[in-house]
Amino acid sequence: MRTGGRILVVLAALAGLAGCGARPDVRPLPEPAGAQPVSLATPTSGEPSCATGLRFISGYTDAAMGLRVMSVEVVNCGTQPVELNGYPQVKLLDEHWQPLAVEIINGSGGIAVVGGFDDAPQPIVVQPGESAKSAFMWRNTYTSDEPPQVGSHVDIAAAPGGAVQSLLPVSPQRDIHIDLGSTGRMGVRAWYR
Image (tube, rainbow, N blue to C red):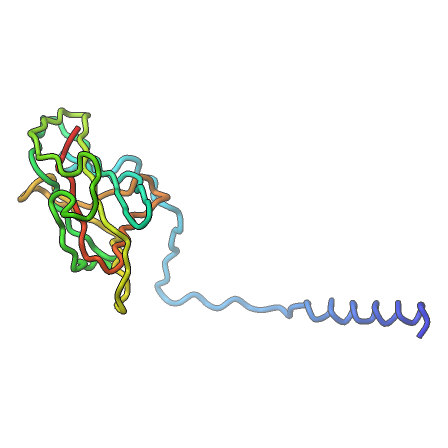
């Protein structure tokens, strides 16, 4: 076949492909009865609620060789001073808000030696607008046939009997991710400044 013939074959093939991309007119499906439009916009409510006078915020997680330490902050967003003396009360929940079978330990519980983590609780007065800190510690070790445990939500209170609320992620772009593997244990540091 000569060059001119090859060009004609290529042009014919391209024309055929262009015809394949043509789409017949398609009528839209009718709307179901009672259908309402849904907004896909992200809510922009600004600051989270402060109904209890306290707000709990997760910090960034430091990870090294399977050891994880997540900082936690409590902010007094109320109008009265708050006294803290002890450990936050914590419950881990999965992505479906179901409780995980996890042992919550005051202090490190032998998970690892981290400076200050096992310091004894001290009374702290948190004035309005001020904050105090705590931390969570766990190992991401996986030695089981069962699926790994991952905490995606945390219920937290400042003290036993305190108002329980959700721990807020450090930013809207970062979810809470407590990847316990199969260890089933997490240490909690006492409140401190």
